[in-house]
Length: 427
Image (cartoon, rainbow, N blue to C red; front, top):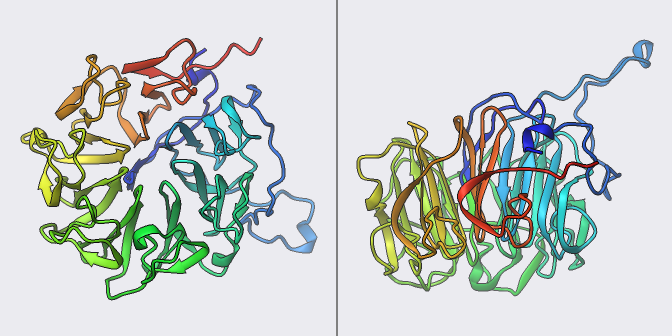
């Protein structure tokens, strides 16, 4: 049974560039008659719905419903999460640490329904996941060995826990990396928590880890977008600049010095940046004009410039010449994908499981076009070895590895062509 049989009334997806980018809106959704595992349960930290308080005289009436949100898809190392138009979240795939929101197991399928509501953004990290609600509160679940859940402990949790240290802040954006997480508010203030190897939390120190949010320090403009990679973090400034911190040994921080930095360092050679997206050891930016540039490690051709040489400063993706402007961009693992304003989908980089879209399981040093998706792509995400795209009509397509059910497609080992998400018959 195709995903549309379990999806009903979803709205348009937000463009994802770390996938984060501007959101557009359309209809799509999950069928409430499908049984998922586990069933909805109470969160460890109750979510406060942002409903309008009712006067005593009308106490028996229903609270004002939350408005619909722009649906979104987000891929982790080997799991996938879907934000529905009603603010609910479902995840599936690899679940060794509870990152799909169900009791730890090898993998989760059918999708697990999270005990969350009123969610406006999701971010799947390598081994954990996080969500942001209407009230600006952050919830995380999954692996927590480096404090990446922000709970003040190092205990894993398959039940979402609130990042209570940020409860006084109205967070507007979140991003999950391999072992750390970051968030920012409307004023551009930024916090990170989890592993701090090479100073990727940006707090000015190189302590082993922080199990609660630490403010990003240093001299920098207010940030409007942030992305967490495997060993580093980058952010876009309100003035169109790009800044990075953490591991710079392969050029991740955009500096010729190839040095790690525990404080944000401005990246030279880019301007008018609106959003960024990071993979394991590379990062790409999207500009206001719809152009892109990438830097960092280039072992599998993830920079899209016909080589495997790392770049320590931003370099154009040469294989996209004449095909831009772009409207969506996502980097993950050692692969990068983008969607043009003409709805053309291109991917490049590592392709051992078909995640770059080539039938031959060899790395793609230049972008190749991927076809087979019906409808306008409204959300795009790249994980460790798979990628997914969600259309305005609610059709979800994934490609790449499926060894842990991350594609949600029965009887498929991996696929270089987009596979329409299917679910068990449920009979």
